Length: 256
Image 1: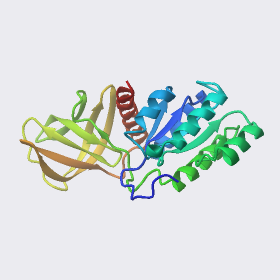
Image 2: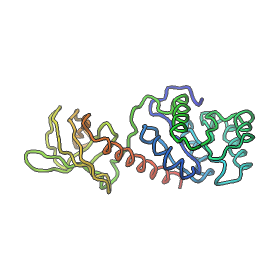
Image 3: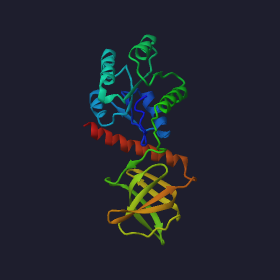
């Protein structure tokens, strides 16, 4: 499947016109499992975006967007484009049509399967996760990360010498984050902060973190803090949700 070159950052996974049950249950769980997943409702713009991300994975819903015969033409067109040889295509539908299944698996030969969403959602999730594992969708990275250095309202408050100071978060994953401060607070390596307050736009999260290290970032010192294992699972889930919405907004900007 796809390109066999070493994949460090993982692959972008696009769902074209997913039905509500796929979006709310399956995609939501894939996000929590650290797959970089996007929802797209414009197949023409997405094909152009493949030129920038030529090792993408896309799952098509044949029952929405355009007619099935046009989906077949679109899929065959992507597969015939030598510049897009690394793009892997699969089908995810809620309708069980054996003739369509045979056509796309045996005739069109999509590489990422034909998944029919039935009442057992967990089974569908496991099937898709197996497909994505075979496609090396995660690459070598463990966690999806959002770069927030150019955005406002992405901050951290932490207690230093009896008062809370505010830093700007540069990047964040569920493992930790990097940040800079207006004035260098001189944080020491391995310092434990039990009362971190993260503001991810409208999302407020309390967490616990340890200073992992520091590096120069222009004229300021950027600190890296890692979350502790005691972090609330709900907080991790909300961070993942924020990261995905942040990345989704950036993909929309690229599409347009």
